[in-house]
Image 1 (cartoon, rainbow, N blue to C red):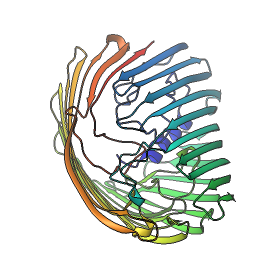
Image 2 (image 1 turned 180 degrees about the vertical axis):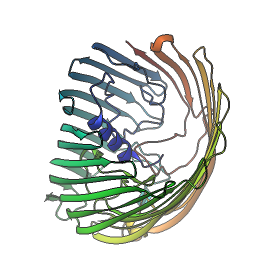
Image 3 (image 1 turned 90 degrees about the vertical axis):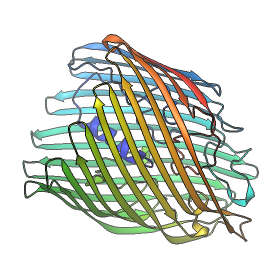
Amino acid sequence: MPRHEIARVSELLQSQLLQPININPVQPHLAESNLFILDGAGPADLSFNEFNPLFNRNRLSLQLSGIAGGQNTFGDEIVFSGIQGKASFSVGQFHYETDGFRENNDQRQDIYNAFVQYSLSPKTSVQAEFRSREIKTGDLEVKFGNPFNLGNFLEDLREEDNIKSTRFGFHHAFGPHSDLIGSAVYLTRDFDSVAGETVDDREEDGYMAEVQHLFRSERFSIITGIGHFDQDRERLFTYQDPPFQKTNPENTNLYVYSNINYPENIIWTIGASVDFFEGSLVDRNQINPKFGLTWNPFSGTTVRAAIFRNLKRTILTDQTIEPTQVAGFNQFFDDGEATDAWRYGIALDQKLSTKLYAGAEFSQRDLSAAGNTFIGEIVEADFKEQFGRGYIYWTPHRWLALSSEYQYECFKAPKEFMIYSTSKLNTHRLLLGIGFFHPSGFSARLKPTYVAQDGDFVTGPPFALRVVPKEDQFWVFDASISYRMPKRFGLLTIEAKNLFDKSFMFQDTDPGNPMFQPKRLILARLTLAF
């Protein structure tokens, strides 16, 4: 799902805090958001890399993954984990490098991770985690064009980002229906960006602490929590006046989410959060109501609806233990700091048979945000986002899976406060899939994707902005063949991205997680587990 990275890594953190001692390795890349790696082009894949045994015992485990392919692409991930009595640990390393599909599209990144968990008693456990990420890149985004008539990429943009974080967590179970979890993170970041005479250097350090209580009963559950964030920032940016600025954003948030199962086929989600935010651009104190409905009127039918508000506060490492969704609708997006957003959504999910599933959903976000214009002025603006999705999943045979999914995105903003270099952007995606899975371990996949996109792109000098309409439509085909080794020993995959080498123009709305690129890429991936 596009633009769901905060939710993904936050759900991972929540599961880590609630998990018992186990042998499951912590893959270094898994907790990092926005890796800027083409979908499926990294050394490890989320879908098939489940090599863990059903039962735990004291032992050591080693998982190795590697990838190599065109565009001088190379990557590896090594994870060593173990469990002994009341303690478990995981140490991992991730490396990825590629020249990219065009000039100055190269990147090189390294991630290191160390995780340890200890069970103080059957009811209480503690854990600690250290992560380090170093990335050096050119211009990685896939886009129609840049403002100021600079073309669709920057030839001289070079960026370096070094992030280090230390996290401590705990979990205490008061009883079968009551849990207390907590997380504290300290992070430092050094970011440098240079493009011609434009320099953007940032140094940041900050901490975030959160505590949450979960209570569950047969017909009622409630989640309450509190968190605090504090960060010191120093920034040298040539478009600012003055160019050097020091800021100290802070945020305190409180929340309560309740799920009420009454009558038997309806779950009501009722709650609210409160934010007290002091930012680098604006300060906001606001109450955010949360309302959701999950209704099963018939067997196999689920109707979902939600209305809620949230404030985009700064979240260290993009991870929070606050619930990420209301009635299945995501509430954390990579918006600008202090963006005030309302989201309205409705959805229908239908199980037509044991082999056929279908569904559709539509939602809209109304946003109010503050930001910098091209000439460094702080402006506030209102804009809209719309999301639509429909899907059909069918397994006609135990060896065969078919899927079709339609995704729609629409963004509208004033040209002085553009998003993705546009004042309006409409994107239609049709994602098809055919998967064949033989019991011998061989599998094959074909994923055709149709994209139609049109938008009003902002161009021209800063004092005379003009809007130019652009559009493109294209098909992209991805294909792969795999062999899963017996006894969970490993997986070998040969994959082709953009199989027919289709060139196109496209503005990626989730640039940190690109789905495709306008050039063919052939890859081989091997994963081994011991």
